[in-house]
Image 1 (spheres, rainbow, N blue to C red):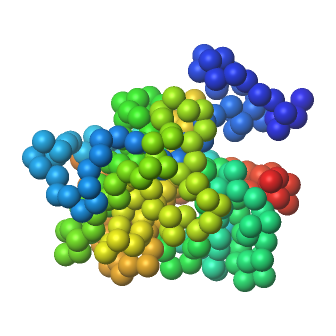
Image 2 (cartoon, rainbow, N blue to C red):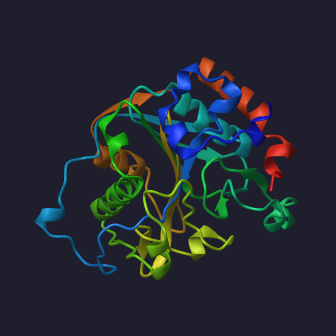
Length: 289
């Protein structure tokens, strides 16, 4: 049976253990969660009081500084491979081997086709709209299902990560704020099976949504999520702002009380190459919508 045609009602999905499913079903039996869930309303730029100060999101965090520049397909595949094997929360900071464009799982190829001659195109596994890559700081954050943070709402996780980004900027002398809720945000709740943060299939950085990071009213950091039985993957980008070499380490320290530096091993890279060849690097995946 083709995984493209395999549909499981949400109630049944919740009761299945991914470990007993064949691999071709594991990537489809999941929930895409992006950036649009509403929490408490706070005006843009409003400083949080002591009651808003919370513990770091993770007790410990594995940190991958992936200094190798990779293709768009391999970068997406590495994120998925890390979700497959993660036993601790982890973050990977990475680069692109040449200018790239990623677009959300539900995006239409026709909307990005005109960039194919100048950029490496790839469809993400997460939701959202169009993101241009090249000079940005791109990261993927994985929370395994066994970690306590996985039990938090997707919006809570999203906002806490972006608060950590804001704090990292503050440590470097730059003031940024989190976007307040918009009228469109009200349409989405944690009970929805699929939530997409970029309502128009346009550039995500042109359309801030709840808890995106803003500098002088302009979006500089956004992300999208996918939640599976294995865990949660958040793919994010910070762009159009000067960052020093220490920024990634500062962000990691704001997220995890303890950090452990990690290297991508050859087995993980081999697995990612398999995923890229079977999925992200294929025309079928790229043009599925």
